[in-house]
Amino acid sequence: MFTDPDMSRQSGLELLTQVSERWPRLLVVTLSARATVETAIQALQLGAFDYVRKPVRPHQVKRVLELVSLQLQLSRPGAKPRDPVQFAHTLAAKEGYEVLLISPEPVAVTNKRVSHRPLDPENPSRIREEVEGFVASREKAAVVIAGVEDILARHREEEIAALLEGIRGILKGKGPLAVGYDPNKVTATGALAVQASIGSVDAHLTLESLANPIRRLVLRRLAEGPCTFTQAMTASNLNDTSKIAFHLRKLSQSGLVARATRQRYCLTPRGRGATRILSSIYDLDSRKGSGNLVFPSRPQRSFHS
Image (cartoon, rainbow, N blue to C red; front, side, top):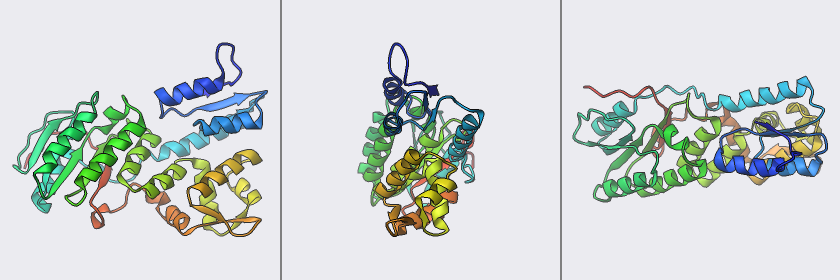
């Protein structure tokens, strides 16, 4: 959405706030002839994807759309899609878990270690209740949730992220949480919110930074070696000092970037790790770790042995 801060009935910043609350995955670009730098930065702080100053030139719109394209690439991961039903049966048959499968559609359960519950996207709190009841009496339990895009379409990303973090806590020491989503029905920010809820707080901060294409361009430049403010601005194809300063500050606050000298920026150890996972963030082999997993789903079907 493109919006102008100078409107007759309400300000663009007020609209931005309302939009962020109601449709948190909508990308918003603000534009205005009279907006000050402070107003533009305030828009970014309120959740705007970018800002453009009037008079708007074709190359500015093209640049914004290029950034949008980079943003949306994160919602098209290269990981192989999985059938959530079959995956649940695999966890039960090959790894010995008792599995709770929560999905929108009825399924044919062929393994006594797999239990199915319907997904109610209108009441996500019921998912936690189902998980708590299932896990309480079991020593080795796993949970597979399919159709997360249905929940994200009805509730704020932060609420769903908190729900999944809570479920991960319930399963701690007992088994993995696997969350499936349709990559054609969830945006990049929605996918990142789900991914972040499966990881740690540090992972959440890292993913928040990686979610922004300008910050990704800066990180790629820093992966080549320390650079100056001007070099970072060139790498991100920006000619706005206030904007690149904002993004460098966010990268610093997330612990990915630090000052090597007064004039140069460099990657921190965590920043170097972030650049390594940048191109494969959804294709990590979590089986070597906790077993928690987020994956794109194939259309759901009943499992038959």
